[in-house]
Image 1: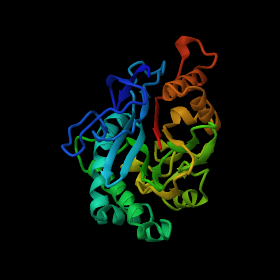
Image 2: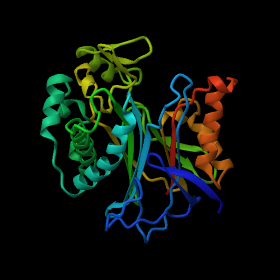
Image 3: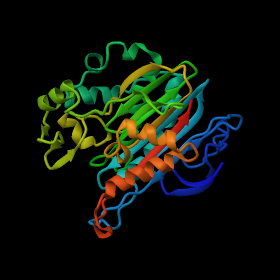
Image 4: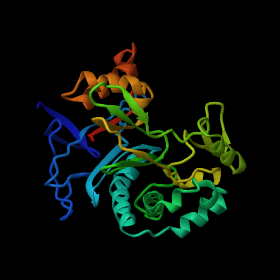
Length: 336
């Protein structure tokens, strides 16, 4: 295998071998940024997390983050990517990328709903969990665990004076990978897909961005609250605007109808040899599912790096260097 440089979490650079396991002892909770891997596991994750650039903001920092936790519960691997927004989105994500996996682990052990956030959503966002969640969601223990974990992590952030969760927020897509199924929870516009490892074709898209354009029910909730939607589908509460109807953080946007409740779905794990691809919109804004899958099949040594480079080229286009504007890019590829 070839040696590649990848970024773990936010700002920590290490050198690893592509598709070789970075070993972590989850039991003793020794931490390597946001990557927790079981020492006896043969699994590996190919990860790239790189900052973008903006000529108007030369001090721009990477607001993306990710986490990979093997054996977060019995025979369950948890993987997630996050894309911060707002002035302090990177600070929020540094907190959430640690707190959310802890909350997921806790909720998988014992379900404890966050009554405070549910009451706040009902009062401010006109969002009743019993009515707006899929009718089966809270009856499924893993679905309920993920919903509760998102709620608790969001509540933890907005009530921590050191975490800027008022006007800053984050997308998040999380997958719980088990021997027979994959459960996905997501808010915002990060995305996960399944790719056939042999053919390089897309098996299925696991998540759909939570935007006013994608879901009539989401648009109606915003319109029934104090928010407004511009002609590009962005959600505004006063001068504050975001591109999504669900997110972590963004406490000020709840009156506009923006909630931290994830959409949760379970898929049967494919029979064929496949990989799970999670990425932020630094990838999906410029590359289709099919292009990502094809690039993976053409670069089996360092697929995440190749996909990230393809996305950066798309972002740059024909712009001169001085005008290059590139979004932060994070991609995690987990063999199944």
